[in-house]
Image 1: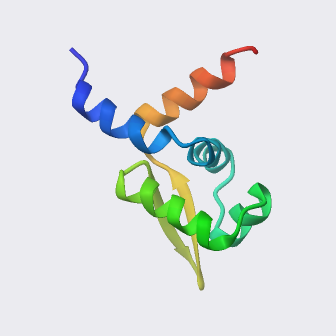
Image 2: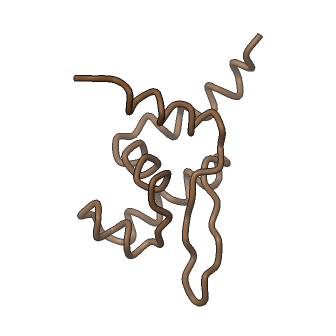
Length: 90
């Protein structure tokens, strides 16, 4: 039986379109806050807030590279969800 509480807690932060788009991008390309902001066309402060929500939810983690922190998707359920979404046709 799936852990519905855990799944529900993972889906809540993904319910925002920007965060959903961010995890798809981070799954394919680890990047830092500045790179995310440039790719998404959003202010760096907004990206930082979204990254914090995703990190606090255990969906992503940051890895220090010199003075920067690069983020990547680490949650297996979210990775499966990304793969499922990418197989869907409009």
